[in-house]
Amino acid sequence: MEIIINAPLDMHLHLRDEAMLSTVGPLSSQSFAGAIIMPNLVPPVSTKEELVAYKNRIQEVCKDDTFTPYMTLFFKPSYTKEFLESIKDELTAIKLYPAGITTNSEGGVAGFDVDELRPTLNAMAELNIPLCVHGETNGFVMDREAEFISIYEMLATNFPKLTIIMEHITTKESVEALNKFDNLYATITLHHLLITLDDVAGGMLQPHLFCKPIAKRPEDREALRKVALEGHPKVMFGSDSAPHPQHAKEACGCAAGVFTAPIALQVLTELFVTHSNIQNLQKFISDNAQNIYKNLNVAQKTVTLEEKPFVVPQKYNEVVPMYAGETLRYSIIQIEG
Ligand SMILES: [Zn+2]
Image 1 (cartoon, rainbow, N blue to C red):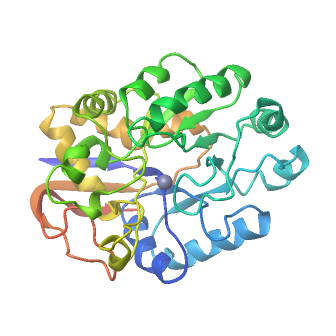
Image 2 (tube, protein in one colour; image 1 turned 180 degrees about the vertical axis):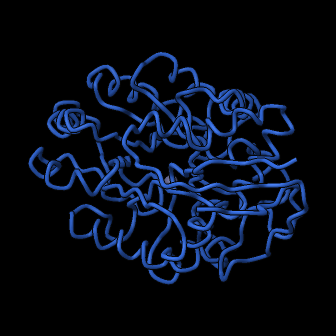
Image 3 (cartoon, protein in one colour; image 1 turned 90 degrees about the horizontal axis):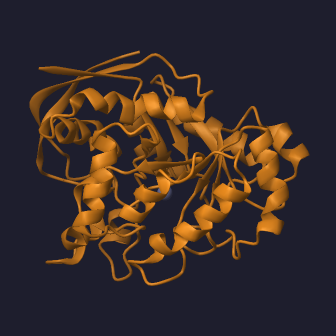
């Protein structure tokens, strides 16, 4: 049986820069029609010049494919409405990181003072610029996301016209919050639909499954699977595919991030087929995102998969993908567009 996906979108992607961008960019642009590109470079993308230059570098390495990089800025409470108006046509969203919580987020938001955030967030709401949030506190690692729910509630109630996207949710508490506020949405990664903390650290430590937010408990994974598999209109696929060179993962002081871009469509297809929900994959992988973001201008692209073994490469240059060396059940057999 062939599975056809129209215009797959990755609504949370790290493409990095320079040599790493050259390695991983084409691995996403080949099979995806577009992706929300995270801005946590060093220094983070926070000016129009940096954003346009980064977009050009991405388009250069992805030029053989039909692929739209949807650009984001690194949130700063100093962004004025005039500045946002001047850059509006170049960007799709703004990403907020709490200070120091993940890779290259040192310049993020330290306190969540609603009055300090108000001018920028009101301007974003008026200009229809969504706010993407890495929702973790500095608390105990398993509780960081649940502790952040109160900040999501503060944002959702104070800025009811702002589209707020809870990025890479990993807990049942976040799934519950989705249904409490009209303006809260979420992305879910591939790996958080598949693994729990047991897979990361229950036996021998698996550095290639170590990520932030850390994978949680089986009941959290169940809650995520439920909304993804039912094609819940407020959730979208965002891989959070986050490459690091092998030496930075297999190290004392392992970098956080799972590299899933080249296997995402194959594994999602298997997951949705296995759970008899393949009819909902299109919603999760593209349609919901187009409804939530409204003006994505998605390119025509069709990806066809078939039940046929795909052996995952051990490495893509210096990057080890999830399931390296293992055999997946589905393969991409055709890409049109
Ligand atoms: Zn991320």
